[in-house]
Length: 234
Image (tube, rainbow, N blue to C red; front, side, top):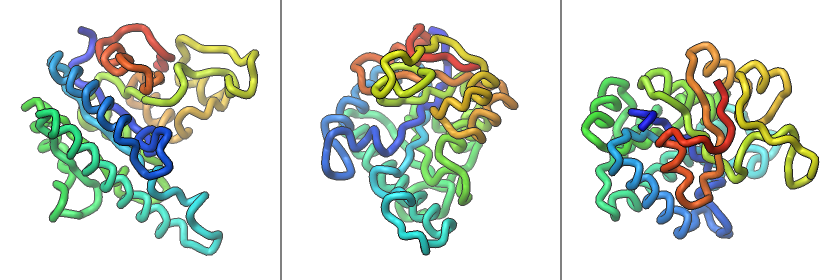
């Protein structure tokens, strides 16, 4: 077993799946089953979830909407997703805590670093919402920040593709698949898997990132167990 504590980054789009609604129940159920398998292996797992399935500034907001307002709306969307994950996780018997970087104490706990670590040590799945709590930062950046704060061994970036490619493999059949990359290669080649701030933060704190296809059954367990899948960035 390679990792003791991992941080999984889930986008809102993953939770939507093929559903026309905000959540695909089949995707949620399968994710919950795989997270349980990871937890049953004794691997501590924390999750940072996005909110793009509910609100995305570029598609839902007109040009006059204030960016800060839009970002806070997105943060609240991540809390909704966190509660959805908590519900499905606990239906399978997983002990779960949802923590938020913005205050919403009637429904979720505030993010407190030492408390999050304690929850994780007790075997609880910790779902981290509201990004960093600040506008202008993506949930990708929040994932790397939390991984750094909470001493995680790796950021597992769950995507719809099986690795990082030199171009979109759906549009370019000649796109090159990468098994390993350095942070600097990702930055220099402008490989848009996570935003530049996230990769820079990962580089500065020596947090490795594994990009993999989370929709393929069994892949999350393989990633958390340190098997060679996807693209390893370090």
